[in-house]
Image (cartoon, rainbow, N blue to C red):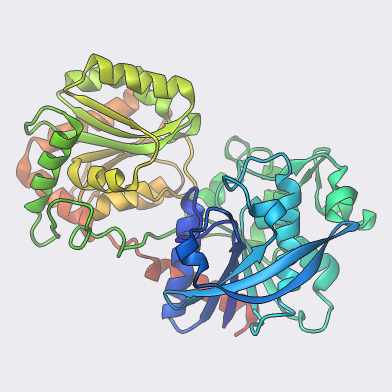
Length: 472
């Protein structure tokens, strides 16, 4: 099969979050199973000169942005056997940062239209276009409105993956004519609650809607999780499917990771103790066998930081040490900085995102705390388990699908159900109790490391879905 993966970011070219990891890893896993899967992203300023040197210029065209015609350059490069295409327009993409600009709507209207126009000029005809999040949500809309019956476009199926339903591409109705060029008789595809909603347009027009975990697929039918889109999703359940994301098991491998001081494996976990000691020394925390909890996250409300704030000092009183890495809302940054100042030998806080340090925290911590209020998939808990670091999570979205409570003998972590700080504290307390019994703990560590969350498993599910759509 020929599959085109359309995304607004992809590792190693441009990244701001988990979408880039998916766009950089899933196509490789699909390619390894014998299918031609290619990726298209914007040509951002953030792409390094070294990577630009490997790109080939294909052609330049003009792309309609409503009544305007805009320049579009098309480039390609091959990375790890995967062909990447790049949509170039310096006015839209030669900026510091990927998102957060006043004209983001116009930038990704252009990108969506350019992806479809590009197909006339490359030596590749996809049977499936897999679009991702609101930045590419107009691709299935444009395909149905303008391209479906054009020569060379017939029979293409569209899949739309929702990575986080909170971000929907909502704008005033004036953009329909001013930017999108959608005819009035098709305006209903995007009209929702008095706004233009790009995500709603993709839900209406895509042949299949995918979420990044099975639990998230049914959670977003609930108003609490759906951010207003539950009414339309309930009517489209017949084409809704949840497929769990995977992780790059080569990038996150305690046996081969160059970022950590000592390698280890499920057969010999002794190196993990050296990683813990090194982490404590690097962060200036007291040495000792007390449990270390790692936190690598964005400091935002839906990550459950409020629950941590409520019982943080109770956890400190249990002898726990903390290695915290992240950034976000100022009130949460200030809280963690205050805790680090109050308990300098027990709490380390690093603001920002430092990839090398994140690897060290995954390897050197004993436990990993993710009390998310909502979590479409979550990669951090899977990465933590890969390094034998035991996750403590709230049962939501992908966290529910990947972490089994160790209340029995077959768990791989600790879970709690409600958005309640005391429930979280109980899960932490149970984890500390098991940690104190080294036989129980070492068995738990090995069970966590034995879990397979590679892309190979998820790729099979994606391929089956593509086959069913195309009758391949």
